[in-house]
Length: 244
Ligand code: PXP
Image (cartoon, rainbow, N blue to C red; front, side):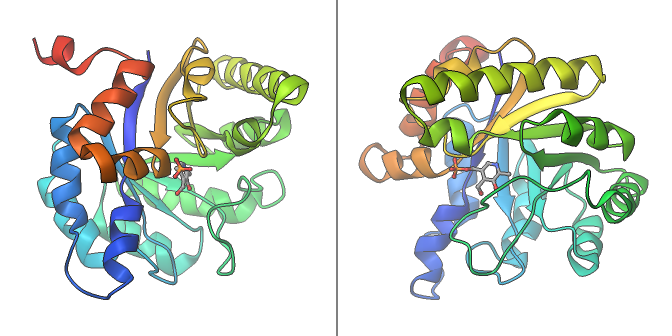
């Protein structure tokens, strides 16, 4: 059963709407862990539209679960990430005009740049994951550049329906198998919700799911702890069994 990484970017989105100090993503991380989160994920974007450097610094000090920092492969961001020293960095493509991360990183087409980023981070003792589409060439390239893990982009699966959804799920199954046969850890995320998560969480070999928007959206009505518990009940061990 996969670990659940809770992406708390959108807590910071609400704060940044007023450029004030509430709600604090550091509080959200504590609540998410009380609800059973196995990890906390944040995306430090180049435009700092939600998560700020201060958030990452405090989260690294206070989060006892795994801290996964998403960032672009730009030199400046890699240096910041290496300096901050989270447990894991997930390298993602980034475009300023996008609302959210739209596609996977083109590792196969940018092998040198990605390899340099992976090497820098691994030399700093950080585990590196690459956010990629479920394509064989990208998975093989991720292995070739020395990544510890891949995170499969589940956005197309999440947005599809009917036969297309079956096809997207089949691609994810293929990608998980290819990742495992390449001896690389397989994660998945993006667009996963309480309604669509189970088929992905049930794929044998998926070790981590990173889920943000759906959990934070539900938390407005039920609180973060409960929203995480609800997701945890779908993707893995119920929180009360994990601590009992
Ligand atoms: N994984 C990665 C690499 C992402 O960039 C995001 C969005 O920030 C997520 C997972 C979470 O996506 P969502 O908010 O749609 O659950």
